[in-house]
Length: 123
View 1 (tube, rainbow, N blue to C red):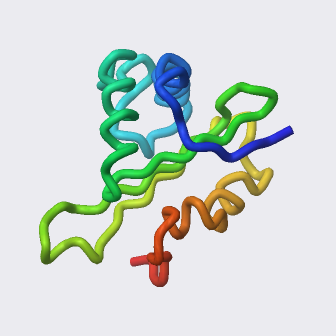
View 2 (view 1 turned 180 degrees about the horizontal axis):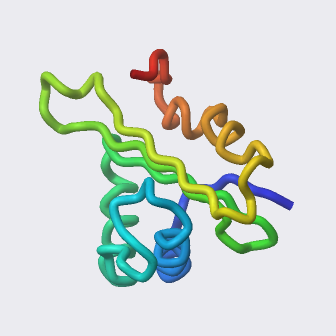
């Protein structure tokens, strides 16, 4: 069963492993296989920090407890750029064309980041 959930610090090692794996599956990421820039400890710290920071958001897609996709949203802290959010969606190659990324974008917990904001336009 596929579930869409916010990460906990217990997910840090699997997040790092996921990114290291999918880095070799696409040229759209800024890193290659085994080049994810965060260590497990740094990922744990990022999860803890992001839980307190409304400008950073991550949503995991798990199938039978295994991460198969990750969505991220990052908004600038700069006053003049707070209306701009960077959206990132990575779905492992074996799960492509199953609608996972589309469903992820439509999830209220991701789209609205559990706030009054929502995506209105893509550029």
